[in-house]
Length: 589
Image 1 (cartoon, rainbow, N blue to C red):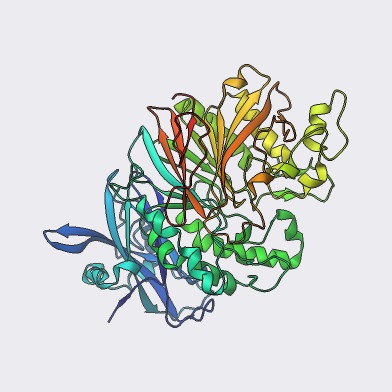
Image 2 (image 1 turned 45 degrees about the vertical axis):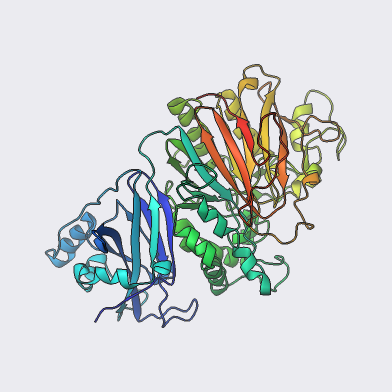
């Protein structure tokens, strides 16, 4: 007799559109021993939509999907698009080709209704598996071994809701005037008796998704901008609590995503994730792949990342880790600023690149090219509508000791090449050691030059990483046309970081790049413009950020909340601004 089990981890509500939603789970098979998975047991996922008929809840449409051992028994089903296991048109074609006939008909996805709340239940089914690990069992063969789904699906209602039920609301179709969402990063795991402190903040975050919450419209989704786990809880050079095997990375994810408050948040609303260094190793760059031990570390770390984070996100660019999505017409581009960054063996900043090597062949577009193309497309398509770029590393403000200034660090540049020397020579050693945008002036220059030359309006960078939340307003001086452009940066970090004395000091970041003693100009070579910025609203409290976009007021309201869900007091930068928020004036759209 077939019996359903609750998921071992999840469900997680991932990539959502107006007609689809990706739901992720991991099977917890009792015959497995951590990362050693029983080769004689195959796990299958079962997902069904909960319907209320009268006073009774029951499962309506339901589908099977795979939870393969090669993906650590994880898998995701895209409601509204995916079909039952073995019933894709390609499955039927293969079955006819190899078996001579087919036992089933092809199915088509059933789109969800825009802007509608849904409840789903998810469970797992275990089958005996005589096939060796190196043999592939086609979906159409596996399909015919499964019990009738209509005879089994109601058992989903018998599973505990806290571990098997997910709720979400599909995104609206078309454009909306308002959008609310949450931003955060950096969940240090907590040690010994402090483990539960690392999970505390995710309880208050859930309230922002409720109707009638005191802060405004329900939030639509959460962006987690990196360091969802800490593979190296102390330091990459200290072997204690440093993950370097798949089993250890698996444990980090199961502990983090299985914590009560975070698990509840992840199953109640869409979450978009991207990695930063601690998903691999502190200050990771691609250069380390030349070391055999680091190459192995990268393989196991990224395998775990793709199983536990990437797999429930958008697949915009196939297996690339960066992606784009939209909600209510507002576009987002989520950068991979970690796995494609490199610093070559040459000293200096001229060969450093954050988003991959410069593109040579347009048939193989680089991440930077795709980002710039996306910005241009959005500007042409939607005009001044805000364009959100998620970057794990902070775009601005720079740390004071990594700033660009002609009298800071190295000898002041002179002559016709002064601006070029500013970008690549001044304070070179400090910036070379940086783990952020200051070490990659090529990438920053290319992006800013594209924004200026193509009049890209209302670019908003969303970041984490530095354990000190803040807001920054970016300006472009020296070119009358560019001075009309508005750009911003919002940093939200950390969900939990118990050592504020160790880093993240607000006095360590530039507050005004034109103020004496803080000068940090960034000449945009090839144009007349120079980037400057002002930053404010700093806090080192454990925090998350709520962002409210309002077309009517062409504004972006940034509110920061602490681990108890209380607003973090902010010094009002502008007259009339509430003390617990900063209101950014965007160009009208």
